[in-house]
Image 1 (cartoon, helix red, strand yellow):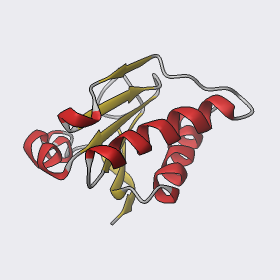
Image 2: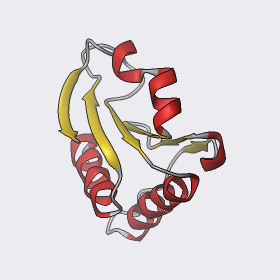
Image 3: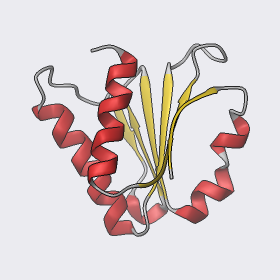
Image 4: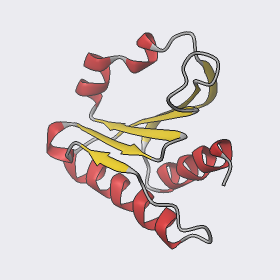
Length: 116
């Protein structure tokens, strides 16, 4: 599966599960470790856990059985990272998202999708 196709599929899952302030950044011109970041906020620990579960289950059940290379963080910590190699998903509580400010840090990346 192409990396942009994977990022778009993840966005669809996040929209279906009512993730908030969804952002896809194209990092291909600014770094070599991944192609895209998908960043999303969840309103509670429970929602962050549901978003994480929805992504991992839907991609695992899909035609291509896409599995994460690494998962880091917990919903109770306010930040969950799902590493799909060419796409890295960041699920944040609003407070942690403001604190880490990935959008500001990667401000030279091209915005592909923003759903507020």
